[in-house]
Image (cartoon, rainbow, N blue to C red; front, side):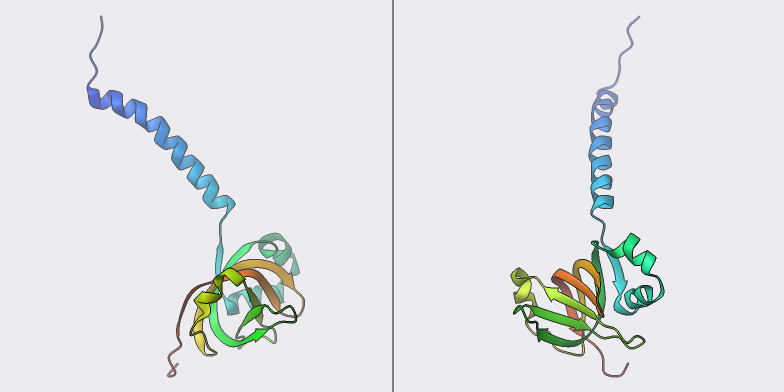
Length: 144
């Protein structure tokens, strides 16, 4: 009348629902806080072509943008701004560096390739990212 179950089957029956719950929560969290990764040229092209896409997909979203540093400035509020180069467009991407990430700027100079992550607040003339952190930086080869 009673069948015996192997210990492995019992353990699997207990663990699988827990793992399913954990993975479901991780997937929800990943999609909720997803970061869009784009080149500076791609982002500028999207902003130039469609204001509707900007409102729906980029405004108040975390973006990870990579490109060549055109310059580094201090704005009117004393904040450091990294400007990404734009070869095809008149506009640039202005990334206001979060003060807690200034240490990661050491060695950053115009001409270097950089990858940054920040919150897109829209476009006045240039695209503006705030609370930006530097993910990585590397030299741009001069022969390109």
